[in-house]
Length: 191
Image (cartoon, rainbow, N blue to C red; front, side):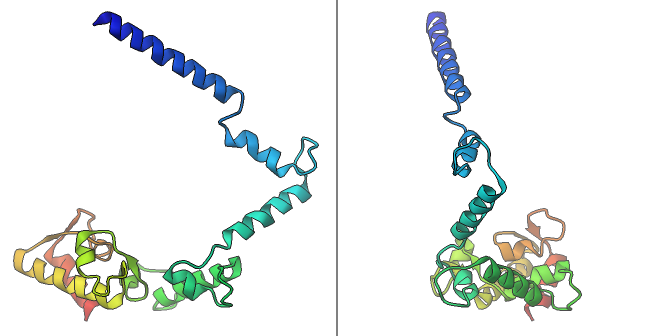
């Protein structure tokens, strides 16, 4: 048994040494390769122009193809991509929709109510049960139905485990349980 343990230890040690040699040569390091990619004229230095070109190329890559509901809405010129300006406009509009009192700050209540203005991805079995159209997203009505069902559960049992992103906004003490007081806040927002 000791011999087997010794042999395994030697093998592991040899593998570690081989791994460190590979990393020392720069083969596994993305940091070592990145400057070489940016250095277009191969002079060993990345100048201002090369850095600017790399930034432009990265920006082009960031203009992702439209493939989900928010990108379809954010793509205002319908070119199939969301540019940096369209992304910034979308963020501003989203913040304005959530900031109901217009004070420039999203309060905890406004954050809780964000389910009214946006879809949320279905992540749990409970959310899947309330996804009536089966598209993998909970829209405002589906979220409202989920919260009403949870409110009824809290009313009958006195508490309920937090099982969705919308419910998590109402869990004021972050204990993972919706109490009667927390369900009251949920009830006021559902109305």
